[in-house]
Length: 175
Image (cartoon, rainbow, N blue to C red; front, side, top):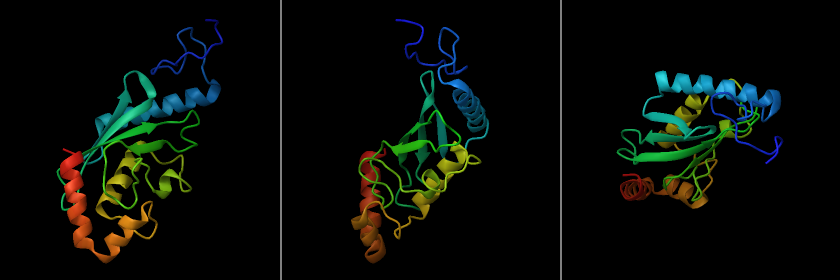
């Protein structure tokens, strides 16, 4: 292997084992920002949430969200994968549910319809704020901008049946 081959950066430094930067200035900016957010989320985690790196890769995280009380998701523990791009924080992280969930804004592949993860991303946002936004989505779905139209329709026309199904999925997949 020669010195220019792709080598995973160290989670702590954003540099390869040889000490060479693996992504230029953007990588070090991203790595420093992610490290700062990791410290913040460890010291002061958002309510009902936790997150941190998978192994030693600073750019790949796993998060957990405890279903908010007084919702069909209460009592469930939902796992999410977070992938930070090399351009972070100038480009939004990719956040995907790994636990199945019955929700009009989250599809069967775990993709989330949340404006702050798409067009309304701002470098001022943090992963802690993103997790809080997702918790808010579990409390108050947005059926007028759904990812799953059939679930949104049920949410609007038969809320009782929607909530029963969401509770059943939470019991089945999130416990």
